[in-house]
Amino acid sequence: MPGTLFVVATPIGNLADVSGRGLDTLRKASFIACEDTRRSRALLSHYGISKETVSLPAFAERQRAAGILERLRAGEDCALITDAGSPGVSDPGEALISAAIESGIRVTPIPGASAAIAALTVSGLPSGRFHFLGFLPRKKSDRAKLLAEVEPLPSTLVLYEAPQRLVDCLKDLLAALGPRRSCVARELTKVHEEFVRGTLAELVERYEGAKVLGEIVVVLEGRTGSARWSEEEVRSALEEGLGRGEPLKALSKELARRSGWSAQALYRLGLSPSRR
Image (cartoon, rainbow, N blue to C red; front, side, top):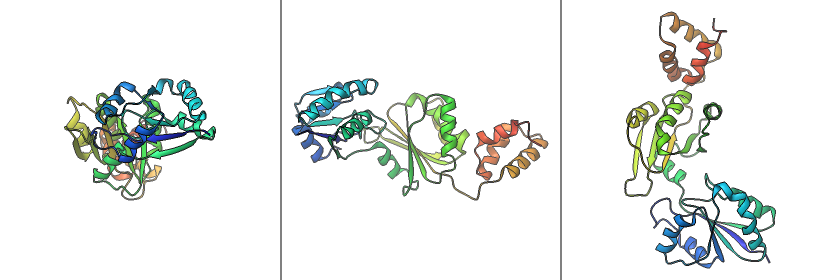
């Protein structure tokens, strides 16, 4: 009889944020599959868990999943964990979980901490509906395409970002989505936990030139306000502003506050040869 793949959420910072069921599962599993065995050792050692661990990093997940599946088919139980949070959510695990399901292996979640949910609940923004973006694409054109897709959504947006890319990320969000209310959650559950709330423009100013460290979640409001202006209305407003001698970049940002269009889209329209 095949074993079970247990998908176990681990703490996102504070080691106390692990469930009793999660610890019990780690103790009873035949072996533990880890994103990085060295990182997982801190959690396992803290709770006195001595168990065989195997590495399942993102760059080799598909190749190494085969060996784990073989052991599951042979009747062993595997506890899957990542460095922090829920496996498969912007972390390794998705490929193994899908392969296990296709192989008829039982997959059971052991829920727990989630950085995205933790940040959303204290952001001060609507939490009834939200859209999780994970990490934005690194390639600028792909990032712009994704932001254009989510720009009309009324639901709150949640994403992850690396500290060295935070300012560039905030600038891209501001250009694509306008000056929305936002929250930067940093080092959740850790000693230096920090929440900075304000418009995207204010957050850019806050972090420009600052040394930023730690894991980061960005939460920002969805599209709000009155109905989106038609393209004809936008072009007319652009023509009027440019006719007064206003710089296109500044005009695009100003109109973004009122039109429901992103500053980036307005700027492109202003450059368009079809502008009257």
